Image 1 (spheres, rainbow, N blue to C red):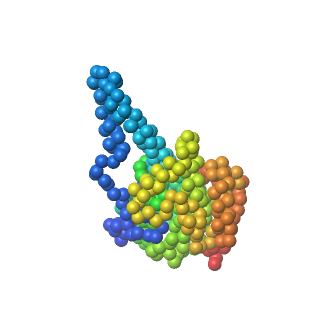
Image 2: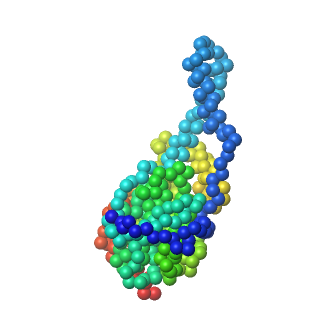
Image 3: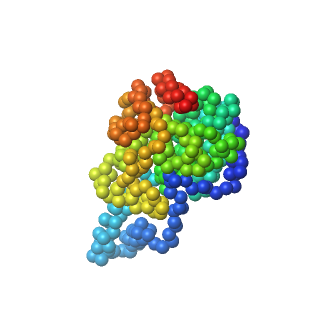
Length: 353
């Protein structure tokens, strides 16, 4: 279990979220005027009430005409709702415990100024190096804890968290990747206050979706860590958000891809009025190419992402990356000595440079 000790954010504890370059920050506007779904629900409710309460209503041509006009809109709304639930609402949070008692918790300001919880392992060797570990979609920090502990054993400071919508952060509506990116920018901004010093060097390790976030962050660094970022590690990374969404959509929704993409575009623009990355461009190379050295560790038989994401990574990152294909599954719950040896060797070279 993690320690009950709570660390403050130091000088950042009452500060607002400082905007970085990788995310969108304007909060979702709230509209009070009637929307089509609201009007539709009212109309359908009135039709049902009329059907039950008014004798002979079913013999009215006008009534059936109104039902006939309403049904296509109702069908569209149901498709809209299903796509929204599949993409913008996270599942039930997993309650999992950390194995190391050395973790200490602290809070920081994420997207929209929301207070989020993160954890830190403070170096026992007075190291001024920091690594951030980011887990994947529908996963949690404890599932990939072995990755974080590996760097702690190297003598480094380590920070990690359950990301927005997963693990201990709770279920979320209007979830987006850009909110997750903003959370990490907020986490990085508060790190010096938590550590008591500004790290000399920074690395980010991202697994699966965390890999996509890592690529976005490392291609748009900002603040103190713009000059401190030394490299990134990507383990079986997501390289295309559209491809990921296609995999997670209900079967029949795939048959209506133009509609689905229209829904996704509308929702992204509603949630993020300052949207910097369009849905169709949320993939390599448009989402950003890292400007630091990259280590890629790819599961040989990736049962979750297949080979398409890795193909994109090889196409766009091969000139700046050391790429290793490892005999292990996609999930971070499984680790291997081969992966650890590769990371040890690469980090040994990085630290000595």
